[in-house]
Length: 109
Image (cartoon, rainbow, N blue to C red):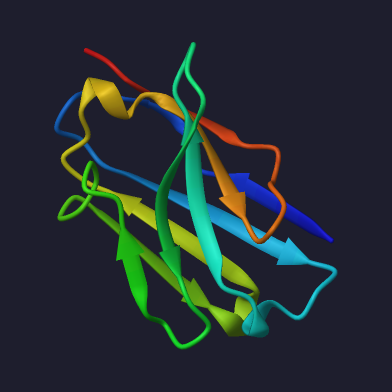
């Protein structure tokens, strides 16, 4: 079982990034997927989830700015992040009962 995230980087406040996570080693279409983040010096924070049927849930801190989606044919889940703020700076992790290695996102001018 493995999750591999990509797409992180440096972006200015107000900008956008799209994170990707490719899964392997399990039946992806039968799993709910999630994104979580670890802000520097803090614990993990749940960001959003998408169920097997495509139903989505978002934390209040990202609702209206972030969009989670999935492509079961590609065993992939995505996180479109718009209107980024400095407080979104974190390492972002894909989750399916276990975590990937994470991809860092820095929002700074």
